[in-house]
Image 1 (spheres, helix red, strand yellow):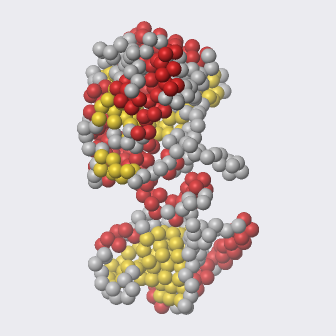
Image 2: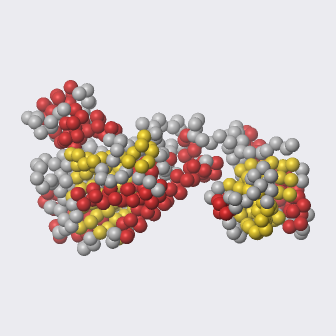
Image 3: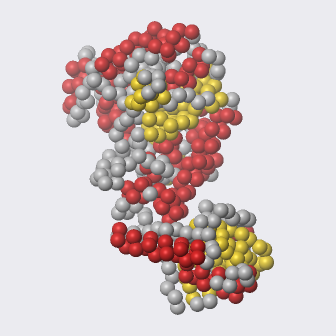
Length: 518
């Protein structure tokens, strides 16, 4: 009995060269036989999953006369003289090919060597198209009983056998195309990503929001505290930044008279790489005139619960072994109360910053340089001690004004703003607030940011004079929010790293040692 051929362990460079050379020789042989190893097209009638579903009840040994045409990649080959079995994979799944010499000779009578070519000149990894009927073998395997075939693409490199990231995670990300071929769950993650993103867009469009694109290249990076990428326009002779948020331009649209706008797009931040951070990522930002942060907390609950139910069929999910219930309503708690609950510290009672720092030091927390206010210190304690404990969905509310330069002051609490962050599975998933509409207050906050930037804070932004001019024309009461789509997809696909949900994450050149993820 012939041994089945299947993907092999990653070969050494010399072996890889030898395998590639052998496949190139087969290309030459195919061309000499008048066969194009890189075809132009193939008409398909079905996918593998369609056939598996349609004929799930076909008994062993039975055949059907329906003619089908499918195409895909060979994942395994077993050859037994005048009979061969291939496993074929397309976008939807796999199906067996039943290849009998007499059937192929009858179906391809104008090509007397067709079965020989199939046996000798095809390899695991090649893409082929086949036509034939359906049968379930005596062993119970649904198969296409092939009458005709065509080699559509000759693969010059072999597929690996073990490509599951256990020993070489970076290579999976670097050669995502191979990862997608041999790891069907990876394809399912990106299929779900597409469905989730589409469902988000549909959710907003059904509620009267318009998606309007805003510039990626900007003269002043703003809308967040983040270090930007810097570039240069030669013709205009001016430095530019890749956007760190879509906020300030979307809010200009509210000034212009639109009442509900959003944008799904790429954001670029020149920052560290970790399991939660990639230098470019996808977000949605959305804005609604005449709404406040209470309205958007309710909207966010409904949005995420609806999307989860639509794509996964439930609002109870498991993330990295922990059950999370996304069924609304979700907990709402102020940053001050949550910190006091976890540490016993009441940040409203400290007489000055030094006293607050002394109390925080007793907790064993090292305060970052530049922590120049009690409000920033409160946020430091939250990030150090509490953030990772928020597993079930929680709206953290009423942040210090010092860390919220674009938020409207709280209508009844001094020193804080009407802002919320959504935390799920110990990380921030969304950030929203009642938007600051007072251009004078906004100028003061921009200038405070600019002073920090001048003092060396790489994440602080400058003064966007055009945005201030827009505010002086008047922006209606507005609520805005941003949701990190990659982090949401991580949650809904049970993916431990952001790189698992970005098809082509940014990586160091292959010659460099990979950075450890933090």
